[in-house]
Amino acid sequence: MSLILHIDTATSVGSVCLSKDGQVLQTLVNDKQQDHAASMVLFVKDIMQQQGIAPADLDAIAVSAGPGSYTGLRVGVATAKGLCYTWEKPLIAVSTLQMMAQGILSRTQDVNALYCPMLDARRMEVYTAMYDASLNTTIAPHALILTPEAFAEQIAKHKIYFFGNGSDKWQQLMLPSDNAVFVTYTLNAADMVPLATAAFARKAFEDVAYFSPFYLKPFHSTMKK
Image (cartoon, rainbow, N blue to C red; front, side, top):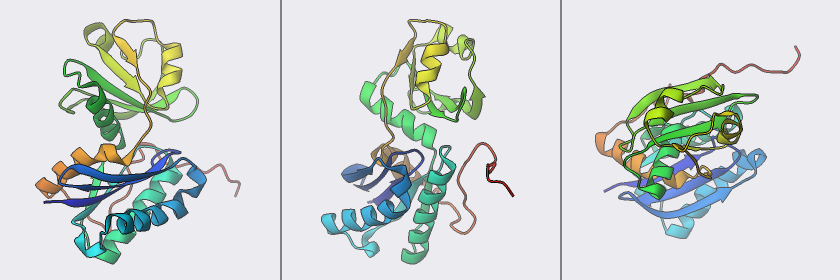
């Protein structure tokens, strides 16, 4: 048995999902990044009230841990950690890129393909990784400056799904190939559910005091001193 609250604010679209035993009960979505700090707390309150769930009923809180927007990740992780402290619940961290791959895999059901999520990291850079149909990592998460030859070895051998808000610029740059399939995808906390449920079963919990988002790159402020 597992009743888990899921929070994602890794991009401009934020969402909160409630799941029970791996099944989605309800999801609330906000597409205004500047409102994440306020909306996530309200979403948590609303979704629990609408489902008749009290904090004591929850078994864990899961959060999309990055990579993604620095500001968004800080909001999501801070919200999740605050709830874990207040309600004395364990924290589950889910890779944003693996969560994205889970989302597309659940839609395509294509067990013979590879899955390559891409998050925009500005200019010609993306945060990316690659997974097989079992969500095993074939290319570890990293920041990549795109070139026409990127992923040439993998594309030559495999059908690959590319998706996420960084995939458009890759589609325009890459050398044409029938093995490259581009699909529309928007992050949603509901795609965290299978991964968080599995992590809960393994008791793969984070240290709430010391956990921080997986940024992939150090933060550099553009503000003048």
